[in-house]
Amino acid sequence: MNSKGPEADDRVESAVMLARGVARLLARMGYQSLGEFRLKSGRRADVAGLDRKGRIVIVEIKRSLADFRADQKWPEYLDYCDSFYFATPKGFPDGVLPEDHGFILADRFGAEVVRPSATLPRLHASRRKEVTLRFALGAAGRLRGLLDP
Image (tube, rainbow, N blue to C red; front, side, top):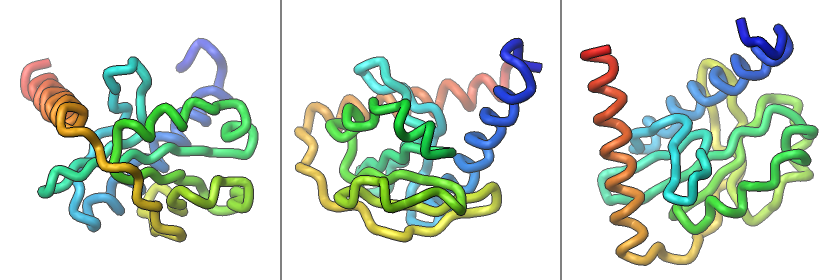
């Protein structure tokens, strides 16, 4: 159990379950994904995806309006991806989300794109390489950890 109490455990489980649904959607869209993806800036994106063409998507999960209002670090992710989405559970007041970014409705079983992501400025080649290498090394490290804990 989390030392912060059962409420904290519920919030973490909720985010993990939403991330699972988002990962399933990204797979259908042609992306391989990683949860809790650490960027060079030190920030951690909730879910990041990489497709065969090298396109990078970042999804920021917001479980509640309070979560959205309290956490305003998401603009920092825009410099690391080709498309950006917010993912929320059913019942989230989606009218508060910025309209120039994508919106995904998610649950533990799957997700659907409600609003597509606007096209972001093209990533510089060196930034794309850095994010892609970070993604590959992160995925390889996680796989190794599963094979040899």
